[in-house]
Structures are given as structure tokens and as C-alpha cells.
Image 1 (cartoon, rainbow over the protein chains, first blue to last red):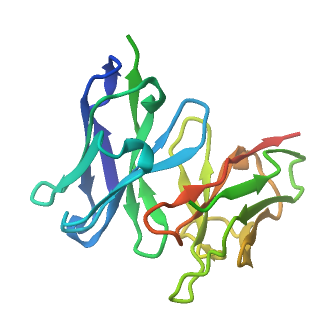
Image 2 (cartoon, chains in turn red, orange; image 1 turned 90 degrees about the horizontal axis):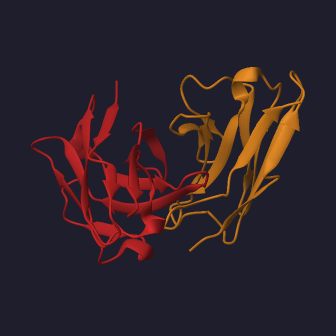
Length: 118
Length: 113
């Protein structure tokens, strides 16, 4: 069974940093591109970032470029999102998501809440 | 970015009656490889999204056959043939044609009348 378990969320002040982790299991992690998708409270879903299976290529939504860094440790089957210069509008539940290789997401984590507030 | 527009944004349906959600994209979702990358997701209250349909009309394993997807090009539809109580959720369409800037519709909230 595919499992994606996020951790590392919490309360951070505006301008602060936070690192999210996603522990993957139940599948061959190195076969899949992985994404982060977020959902602000009461709002819809929004692509944040993606990383190729070997970590060689990374991609970002415009609103997080130069502030967030996606990475992965394939030896630990873990995906990361380093978030910096956090703003109030970054407050959201962040989901770790598996790209199925066919233009879609086939597995989602339970999500982790990031709260940005002073 | 491709803009995805869903309608209606809210739907109140009697148990056992059908429901239909429309999703339109600002550009064709036909990929250069010939596939059309349009998916539908269900998000029940307090839960993570769950995919129901991929590549327009392919149902995921375990998804009841009362859910069906159709459409082409820029116009797509999710239909629930007979709404059940467990179908109360927000439904999102998503395009995966414009790598990596995949985008979602605004969501359609389905409730029981």
C-alpha cells in the first residue's frame, strides 16, 4: 500500500523558515516524480513544486520561486520542502503527492498544516 | 497557465438522483502524445483528495461505477448516476497537460438536499 506521511509543519512567524518532510513507503520511490500541492484554509488546491525521480530537475510555481526548495533523499525514501521568507498567504495544508507518470496524481499524503502568524 | 473553470460551484442533490459537474479549460488538454490529461478528485470533509478519474474517463480502482467522466478538448464532465450520502464532498477537476504547471478547478461542493 502506498503511504505518504508528511511532517514538520507548525506555526512560524512571517519571514521565517520551515522544512517539511514526506516519508514514502509501499512503492519504489525512485521510479516517481513527486510534488507538493497546497490548500489554503477553505480554499482550493494549488500546485507548489515538483522534482524528478533522481532529483536532477526541480520545478516551482511562480509564487514560491526563490523562496522554497524541493529536494529528495532517495536513500531514505523522503521528499522535502524547505520553505523560506514565509508570508501569511503561504498558510495552508501542504500535501505530498505522487505523480503517476500520466499527467495526474494517484496518491496523496494526509497533509500537514503550516500556519504563518506573528 | 491553463485556467480550469468548474460549474456549478455548489450542487444540492436528492439522494438517488443524478449529479453533473462541468469543467472547462482555457486551452486544449490534448497532449502532444495524443492523451488528454484531465483528472477528477473527490475531497470529503476533513480528508485528503482522492482521485476518481484520470485521462478523462478512466475510473480508479475502488471507485464506484456510478462515477463517470467524459469530454474532450476543453470541455469535460463528471457525472454521478445516483448520489449517495457518502458522495458529499468537494470535487475538483485538474489538468496535467501543461507540465509542470498543473492547475485545478475551483471545486464544486456537492451536498444532499
